[in-house]
Amino acid sequence: MLRQIELPLGDGMSSIELCAGAGGQALGLEGAGFAHEALVEIDSDACKTLRLNRPEWNVFEGDIAEFDPSPFKGVDLLAGGLPCPPFSVAGKQLGEKDERNLFPIALDIIDEVRPGAILIENVRGFLGAVFEDYRQHLKTQLQKMGYTVDWRLLNASDYGVPQLRPRVAIVALRHAFSDNFNWPTANPKSAPTVGQTLHDLMAAEGWSGAEAWAKRANEIAPTLVGGSKKHGGPDLGPTRARAAWASLGVNGKSLAEFAPERDFVGMPKLTVRMAARIQGFPDDWEIFGKKTTAYRQVGNAFPPPVARSVALEIAKSMNVSSSIQAVA
Image (cartoon, rainbow, N blue to C red; front, top):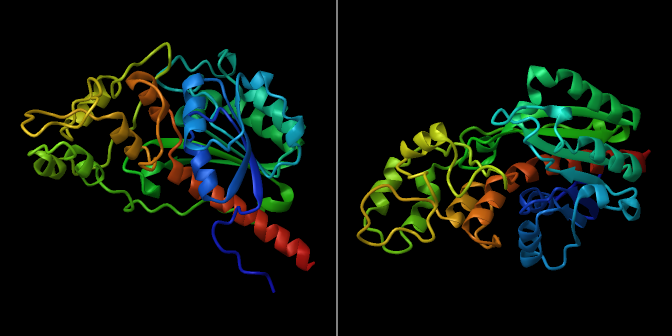
């Protein structure tokens, strides 16, 4: 008889993460019970965010091409949020020809580490027809290393995040684990509205219009757009995104330092803390840096609840497989 597995399922399992950013995926993995042995991130402010919130984490600040993975051979899970510009519809979609494409380096690290499982997050554009050959190339390379590979488009709102945010999750498991893996069950009705999510933060400075605003903001948010150091500032995205925010009563042209004051009139702006809550970060997760860099970290993150949902299923597949082998 198999032992009953209690949450968090990843307890006792180890992970390393590439391109960790502000810690969205790392928080999700932690919530699923994985213990981080190393997190690699090139952005100095994002590294400060990670260290500020989890001083005990082993954060490697630098390019993943300079990261030595040899001490982490045999880790249970290798995760990563590889840069999205090569595949984003907002960019030129150069894919493998883009100098920011880090999949080849990630494959080299995977080949050396040979983790039990892999979880890579990327943008919806990765599934575009133009990248069919490249997807198959990646799949073939991972299969040669002994992995079963699958990917799926996940909407963050199906996992309790008050934002649509479609993202591709690529999961690869060693053959011994793959038969027991199931994608997390989507719950389209689980996400609160923007108004429900942010009412208390909008009212924090006594704004008299907070209640009426919350009733107007009665839908989930459009996708937060973090931008990059070359493109994008402290705003909520291009014209179409700003229009979507405006329909919720939010001024998306820039971000605010503080919540609206008591007598404020007009459409309020989001603060970085509000954006972080919409992204699924807990309120006690501090984002280091000034408004522009802090918002960029938040806007580019993998929502922790989505990462946790996938990581729990990965952990379950590995635990069940280990239990079956132990019984055998």
